Length: 182
Image (tube, rainbow, N blue to C red):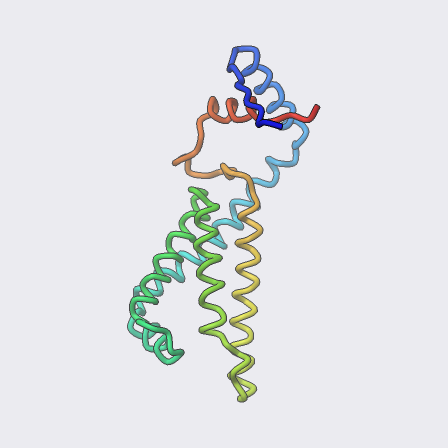
């Protein structure tokens, strides 16, 4: 069996049908508008947390580099700066809704890489130190879970800055070109 190729011609009828279906979907999701505010507030808190943390990597770079060095991180100053950039990009992306899948990927990469190195609670015998590192490790895992969940939300996000988002016509073209069940 060979691959079947087909093309879809965008006509006024197709575009009108896509708009009608999109409007129908919007009617089916009447509660979606009521979810915009909580979603926006959550994004501000979540993205703002990472943005603030990334800024902290630069304002307190010397202290964080010394701590990273004590954990045997190679080139600790560079590692602190690179992780600060990832946090700022990821936090800003979520906060503004600009390319959030890339932003969440940056945060997931940061959290997955940093957590086992910087918060290695399993290496400590002192109960207080072990507990402190375990709290930070599990906090980071929870934050990573939140970032993974956000990655699953279709773009463009509600109440996002409209940079790099497809136009309505482009979204209609994509909708019309979607394969349909027979």
